[in-house]
Length: 294
Image (cartoon, rainbow, N blue to C red; front, side, top):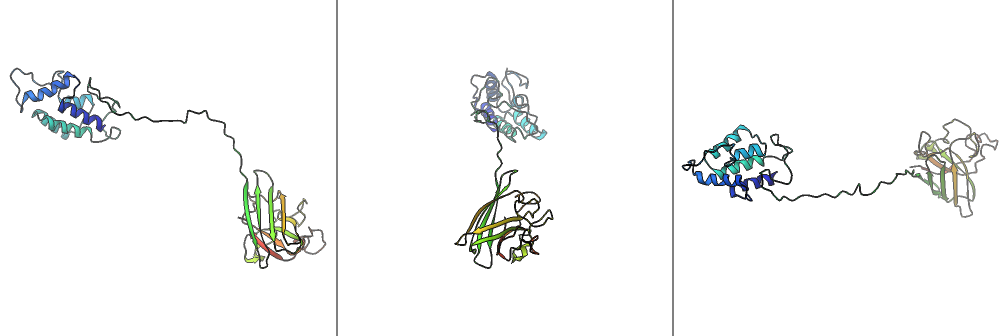
């Protein structure tokens, strides 16, 4: 809006008319009329005259502008006094008072030409490049990403390890185990109900058992959800094993997140040893190391 208004006032003041007789007559009229006196024989100014259009006519008609009364009176005063530069400056101030989208008194203007009849303004046109529609959109295939959790096992002894869980959407959970510092042979391996290790592995609670069943083997129908059987350490005390189980999901009400894995001192009898602890702990002995799933 500012560019159009400035150019309009320059057209009025300097006569950049490109042969437009109306604007030329307006400019000449200001020169011929002097300081409020009209030469003998000169026509009286009329806001509706095609030969001598006033600046007020251009402002109100061409720009459809209705300025506040004070600005209108100021503009009218300068026009009556034939103070063309001051009138042009007043009009310019009115036209550039606010952007066209914000000014309550302005109507939208054509973006690339002056509203003076017959006078064109070469204003830079801004071009934008949009490439979103250039390519045909391809169908979107949603592939569910595997969920993962990790537990770092530590204890009071030299036993330590890392256990990683991963699960595809709707599938069983894969447990990758690597624990070192064990005595060679089988060791009970369970998911316990709490991830609290503030008092060592004893504060992790009992086996995770949301269905309130007795202890068993991983393949048994009746078992704790946390019954993962035994892991076997080699002669170097390293146990590396992969377990696949469907009762320890990573999401949902029975999720393993926030619970703890525990490796035990002895072999788990899988509930079949006949010991008084067989149906609760598998008689797997003490807790060597533990870690919470995060």
